[in-house]
Length: 352
Ligand code: NCD
Ligand code: ZN
Image (cartoon, rainbow, N blue to C red; front, side, top):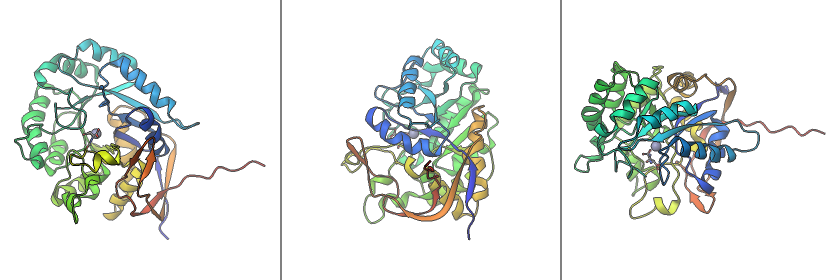
């Protein structure tokens, strides 16, 4: 019999929780598995001030299931000309753990993103001084660049100069998708880490086109070729603490995914830890899951590791084909398929 797997409770270092009724609907999925999550600020309008982050945090806390102790780790959305004083306020708050850089136009809700990094010098200086990490969506938004090359070109044109100019700035290259990103993060002489999603570990770009166009496998950065998937899997299971878990779970209503111009984003919060277990199990590396999922992210962010545990059991179960959340239908990644690991949730004992 395959033994069950007990891990220190993991953290999700890259998560979209949205807002309003959708937040209420998706939060329990994350809160069931993860102790904390780095919460992305790309709401409409984006979370650009400490005051807005405080209010968003309160809405997240209010949406937690009764008795759940999930902790949202808030971020700010970097904009042109963000003042150093805003970074000072963020640091003083104690609840803001990063500032997210979206190149303008690179992904969902990035319209207010950075047009020119030179306009952010003051904020970046302050972040470097205060030890607040810069979280980077690492893709060029330039549509003349082949979509499969946008991460690689971003590293050369943007990240290398940034790391040179701010050598002590902590950086997380988010949701990496290429061999080039793995190599860069592994060898860089600056304090850098990278999140890796479950879908980029499990799928290559063929998943987008199997028998027809598959919008529920479309996310940004887009899935890459098999050689890149293998490089990500090697990095995630290597035990190198620079690589850690970030789901990038990004729910969109079915109608906006199955659309002539479908939104980017995969909903994986429902079964996130089971998806990672599947990826690690496929290469015989389940013993490396705890470091990747539960230790390295916390260590990078300078947070204490969680002290409680979760348990996964080897059990075959079927994913729902769709979820009814608020007034939307959300289709999870691998909808309707079977999974081989299941999060074990204790059945509450009834007191007589
Ligand atoms: C994210 C979203 O929907 O907010 N989409 C995605 O494809 N990953 C934005 C992002 O992280 O790029
Ligand atoms: Zn994201």
